[in-house]
Length: 119
Image (cartoon, rainbow, N blue to C red; front, side, top):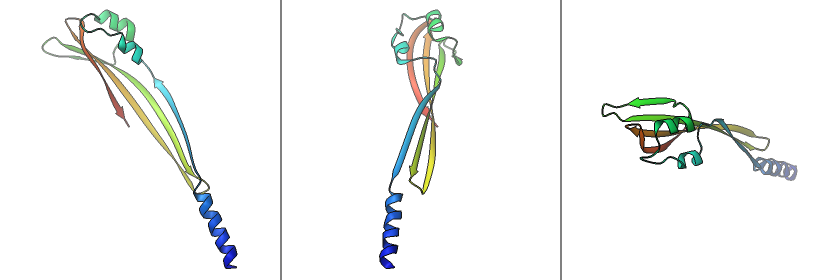
């Protein structure tokens, strides 16, 4: 009897050690790519070129010194499912937002940067 219970307990423990992980990533909204950003030229690219390449910005910020910053966003979602065989599983969703900020002075690109937020 003790031997049977020991084998049963060992079997349950071994089953609980089997971990499965499934992961997938999906772009929800993509406005720009790294290749697009690499074509930006400081001091040469102007507002018309940026608008034709990236479209209208999500946000425009205007400053007293005449500087303007246009913001573009890419949104991606990553879904990861982790499970321990026959015991439990859980799903982890992560949203990643990349924001491209382009700074203009007198209508010409003077700076740009990318920020990343994860939720």
